[in-house]
Image (cartoon, rainbow, N blue to C red):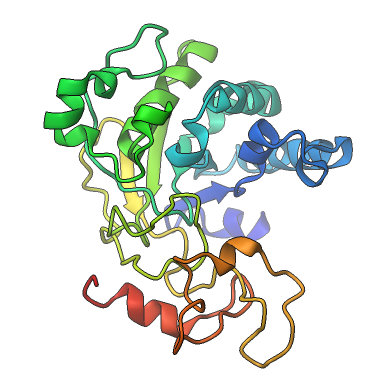
Length: 282
């Protein structure tokens, strides 16, 4: 706090608050690691405190709101909206808005015309003709026929805008999108595979020039390209990884093909990955 207070008049400061926890509270409440009373209380109090602490400084704050490939399913978006509103209370107005696609692979895409029967879900691409002919309905994860109409981040943002604005009248959030690794829309054989994706490439360079400047403030690299998402079962030094996630053994993950190096712990530098990210698509 003291450091930000010292420099707030000299540079523009933007804070991205949290990562994944509110989305986990919304969609994984049945998982004891995500939905226990202690975990829920800790995240709720911690995120509220962070925004409350910094709200009087000259800073711009965005709260992590996951991504469309996660929150677009079922009633996840309405649950996320309820969690955000309940956690933030009156402090939601101190948020400039929300950050989406953090550390994920969703394409930015094109925003579709908004056609809804509930004021939130956009049904435009459920029309077969639109889905076949309009580029805004491009659906690399084949999510639309399975019930998720948030086929790209701009369509997800439009739904999130409507959901939050309905819950908090008079509040119009703005958004930033992580484009650090979403340069190839169909980089995965299964869009549930999230770990060290082999065919992913760098996305749009960070910029404040966006397709929807009245709504999207910037495309930004929130996940540092080259940081590992998680480890292979055996670490590069030959020892067992005690934080191994089975998703890091998916067919799309680096380290599962002959000749590929093992992946280090999440957050560690992965030199092989950054070289793939900046290479020409396969």
